[in-house]
Amino acid sequence: MTESDTGRRRNWSIRSVLQPGDLGMITAAHGTLYAAEYGWDVTFEAYVARHLADFATRAPAPRERIWIADDAEGFAGCVAIVENSADTAQLRWFLVHPAARRTGLGRRLLGDAMAFARDAGFSTIVLDTVSELSDAARLYRAAGFVLVSEREESGWGRPVRAQRFSYGPAFGASE
Image (tube, rainbow, N blue to C red; front, side, top):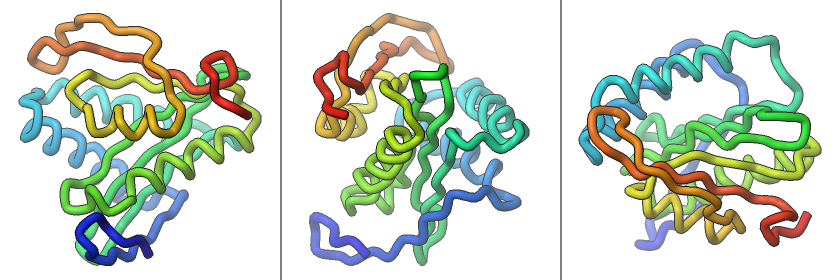
């Protein structure tokens, strides 16, 4: 249970095992929320669906995990750690539903994912995002991530400023 900035209390159930319907729910949440909030088109939803399906159909990997948070109102958020290389994990599919924002859930999911990555033996965690997601970037920076690159891309129906953040000893983060 966590208390939000406004004093409302939220109960989350956070699980790390995919269940039937989760892939569609996560994909739909990404597609509808990013379309509504940033004007992205269906190609973003297809991108999420493709990579999420690849993740779900591989043999279970001990160094990879996904977390899905639900509350009384349904889907509240998700995040995953995916193995990028022997030393590097990638943070993926980090999303907090608007109804669950500013309740501490984002910090909790990010913290759980980072702790898992460290415990799994990764020395670096990377994540790809876009500059418009400034609330998420604040969470990343507060957790010790450093912006390491930016580039303009035409993606998801409109131009975006792609960003890569990294966390690890090379970027000043303690192990």
